[in-house]
Image (cartoon, rainbow, N blue to C red; front, top):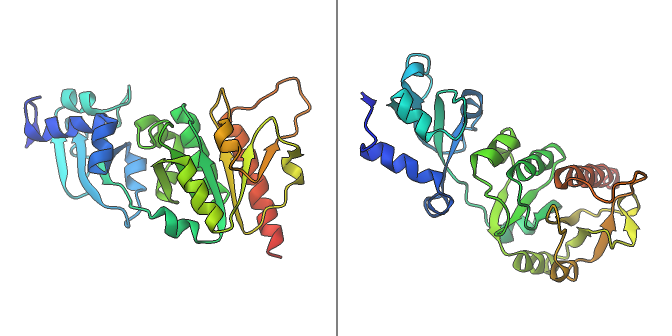
Length: 256
């Protein structure tokens, strides 16, 4: 059966996931595109697959498939050129306190507004072996289509804990003796001078305003990136990637 009416209950329910509040409440999200859907690990629970009418005979490797008319699929899709398939996936539940008890590197994101930056940071965190990414409640939506596309599938590879309160997470980390660094132009030390222990966290702030003063005061050290050019700042995702590369390199060296 092909769903063609906008009044259909299944279609009306699916449309609700375009709203962040509904995604947060239901703990479900859409991921779109054939490769992205195929790359979802088996450990994640796919609730439903939606395909467009024009792709219904091509898609055969999935269960729980609902076919929508091309017009309805285009309404549901968040992209200008839909690939004809999207999956409704259940979010993973992560216990921040259990994660924080583990050794490793952590990234904390405060008020990152651009979903492309947020997704790119998650992708870099995956590449450089970060244990978990903590995303503040004021940041862009981790499970929006733009963010998910920018992660290139990395959202499925490491814990990403969103909607956190920065102060609560930092206090929990302090209780576990995790050294907390913050990226700041006020920093007295350069990134290259920092020694990262086996339990370290780094705070990355807002693209325009950096980290709030209250957050900086909770950090053990403020750190800046050495730059020889005329610009005074870097794109948040670029800065975060440089930081995570340096953390990863020095962390691996400390284990030898």
